[in-house]
Length: 252
Length: 105
Image (tube, rainbow over all chains, first blue to last red):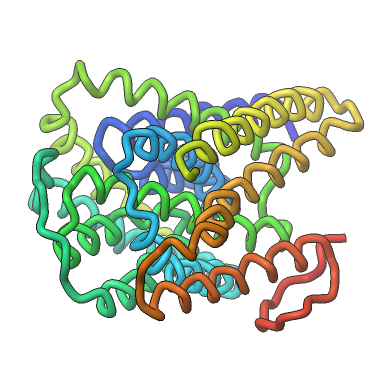
């Protein structure tokens, strides 16, 4: 495998992780389209590499929140029991599904993410929450979050955050920390399925992980200097374009 | 205890895996034979690192004053983790969940 392509994979994951970090998204929504559209990497391999990148980033990020004692391990583990099952299901479905269907599903989910970026509820950092809510519904929806994570190579935060904040009324900071803790386990589970099925390309894997780690670190530093509000509007347009390209690829 | 586990063990393992991936990736790109082996090792460490805090919570679980829901969740996660480790190392498993996974070795 040419080293230049491996370096490009690292550059792509770095870009995806950097933008994801600036926009408050997991990098998966950007990494998978960038790998498939610009580098021609098969979508199943791109999904696996994306999950691997998210694993490394979420582990590093969750350490910060654990240190600040804003991770609800108890709640995270309750929800993670079904999220892990969802991730296993999603990854196995991906392995059995045709690439064209995965393209279409990913494109549709990207459209939803683009909509949420501009029109969705914004979570205030100082929201204290009241704790409570329907844990059983949270467990059920967590399965869906895990399913999407394993299927599409995303962190699942797009569903986990609403579960934790809107459904279970956690304070925003605790929700972020708990979500990161959960994402590290979910992404490890999904990555494992792809790993033992030989989907992860060992030539790309190190560069994908290192690129994403560097990108996320840069993003967290730049995040204080850049007004994310304008980036969100711009990137929602980019995501719409990506989603249309992926849907059209899937439909042939 | 969990804070210390994260701060030292998880952080250390993440750094170790990144270092192994970096060196392994460079050697593998240069077609040095053991490069891929080092990459595999780095990946395995990264994959298994999230288990550490889960195991720490399992050990610590007697302090969780809670309902059967927590215990059932821990049981489910524990079964999945055992399956992952056993399947990953190609061993026959004591607790069966139907995974369509080939043995690694």
